[in-house]
Length: 194
Image 1 (spheres, rainbow, N blue to C red):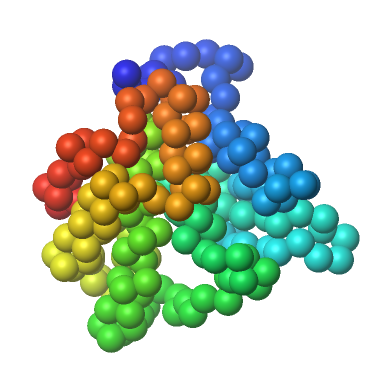
Image 2 (tube, rainbow, N blue to C red):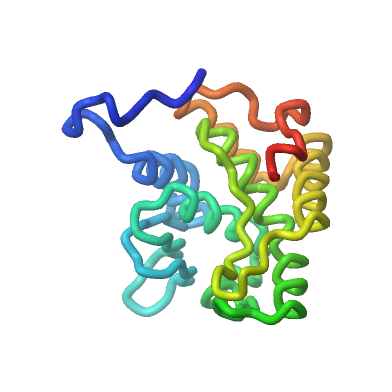
């Protein structure tokens, strides 16, 4: 079932996609006795903040009201292990826009798993997935190897299953958005990443 044409619906009756995504995430993972994590938009840049000080829960922040940013940040949260989820922004290396070719190659290596999960989550919402190189300034697009690695990782997730957090989120998103099983390997084609 395709995502409804939101431009045709009256604004007052349509809940923004990013808010729906956040509601699904928060329903799944915000229990203080469980993972105690919330997803929230409206930020100029994405960031992960572990609980501490006055903040009693972990917070996955995504950019403005962008559904793709929400899905991408959740994918990073799903990939991060328990130890990494105790560190701001998971303790990961990041070089901003304008990376060199070498830095871009390193970026692509660490982005395969999150972007594969993001593709699955996008499918679960009925949204188109776009590979992100996050490096507009340099003009370096996604390499063919990067695209192939993302597709291959999606195939592996579909065959073996992603971790429990990613699995729960993907299926709950599909239920929320009325989409078929997002872990059906046949639904993903490498040519879609061109």
